[in-house]
Length: 95
Image (cartoon, rainbow, N blue to C red; front, side, top):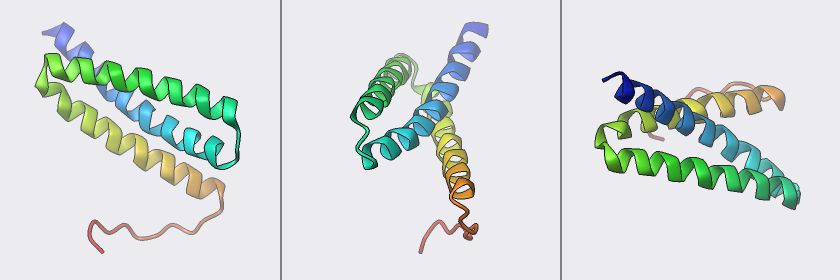
C-alpha cells in the first residue's frame, strides 16, 4: 500500500513538473532557442512516458496525473503572468 501511495505521489509530481516544463519549452521555442527547447522537449517526453507507464499499470493513477497537470499548469501560468506584469484575469471555465 505504501508503495502505491509513493508511486501516486511520484505520478502527481511528474505531471505537475511536466506542465511547468511545457511553459519553459514554449518560451524557448518562441524565442528560437533550439538547444534549450530540445532539452526541455526531452524531459517532457521522458516524464510523459513515465506517467503513461504508471497509469497503464494502475488506472487509479490517472487521478493524481490529472490533478498534478492542473496544478502545474495553474502555477506556471500564474508565475508567467506575474513575471510579465499582467493584471490577473478572472478565470472562467466556459466563455
